[in-house]
Image 1 (tube, rainbow, N blue to C red):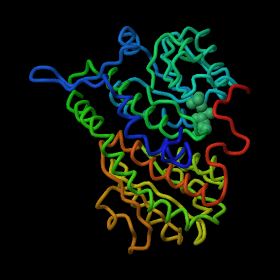
Image 2 (image 1 turned 90 degrees about the horizontal axis):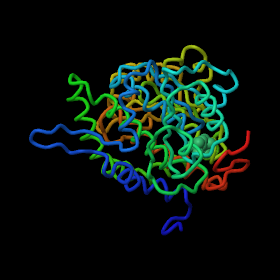
Image 3 (image 1 turned 45 degrees about the horizontal axis):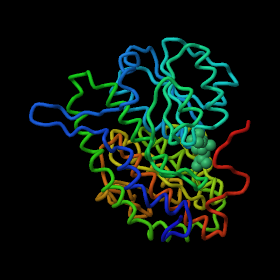
Length: 371
Ligand code: M6R
């Protein structure tokens, strides 16, 4: 049931304040006079000691689920102190890459039925790794075959383009990082700040959803373009990949997410006065580097659309020449949850304006159960 919305993708984008609330429900502990704020993940509590002792954490997924894991990787590395590596499921299987008994492998999948991810799971089980599942579908193959796991509780996602599952996946993996790091006194302040940020996140998502009309106007400007680049780095490298994936999969416009640190190693050659480029430059430790990227793209006459933190327009728009999208500020590791929303809205409006099927893009299936 689409309710007041025209399409499932639109409905699922707009219900993110609620889906995030249900993802966090009962899992965040507010703390009290003598009790610290903490996270409770029922499905994981018997395995946390093993995870903390593992030599490596390996995230495995496809498409949007892979991107969500990429967004969570920095905070997991920071709070756990354990090396975190990333695997696209099909590539791990193609390479028969090394997976060891001392590894914790984390399988991320909205449907829990993706063939490549399931095959990678079988492979990790054969190699003796601890297997953790993060899925949205209770009783799915990945939920059943992993040793333990966390459900997203984001509600059923119908649009082929994953939207609310993505933001819930990031939140679940941030909670996973908090739970693993829970025994480290030195990072308690940081963890409590993130927990406060999680409590406030649904309100901030409500706020960023108010950009709907602005993103529709932007879509009108971009409607006839051939291509759109999206530059991000740090916490928002994933936002660049995921924003580009949304645009290409539903609006059928070529789009590429680029790690801004790689700009001079090839992508800069594409920049001219015609190609539109989104640069994500919200406040975090990478901000000054992104300011410099903007200046260099501007020097090559790039058509820039800059996403920045509220109040930062003047600091990112060189000579007032860029189009600026201002978003609410949250804790740095949660910022990808906010930053993807305008790009989801852009992809949605571009698709509708270009006259394509937004809920069922050509050639794609919601769940990829064959290889
Ligand atoms: O169900 P899964 O999360 O395992 O699906 C993985 C990908 O097929 C999926 O995320 C795909 O990339 C989406 N259609 C992207 O919006």
